[in-house]
Length: 157
Image 1: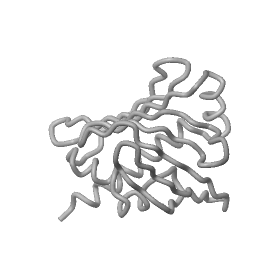
Image 2: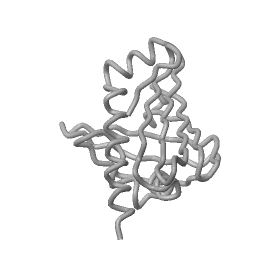
Image 3: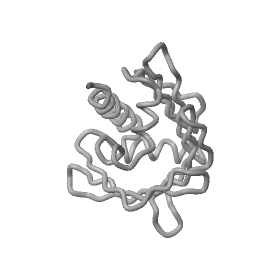
């Protein structure tokens, strides 16, 4: 897994996942899978609605290991199965604070999949706030780790 800060407003994390791209895409876009792996270590996720189409929304709550609930909303901007997702991510509150854009790419690497998660923030300060307050880099690494574990189970007969 690598982490790359392409600009001072971005966080870029990638990981090669030992599963075919279509399996990884399915895990990332279908409700029955997302609630089983999404989020950093120790978190659980409850989906309230999901509509994976351009303009569609995924509303969910991430339940922290400390008992704190974090409301989230993803609004899909671009969907190119099974290669790319682009979405706006915010806290689903009044005024939608903490909004950032995410681009996730799924590259076939000889039967495995390189997942690259790129988060673009409105400013360097906003990026830094997410890193400091929410542990965004480590949380992103852990989330991709949970995805890798989950799709390994999906791929087994």
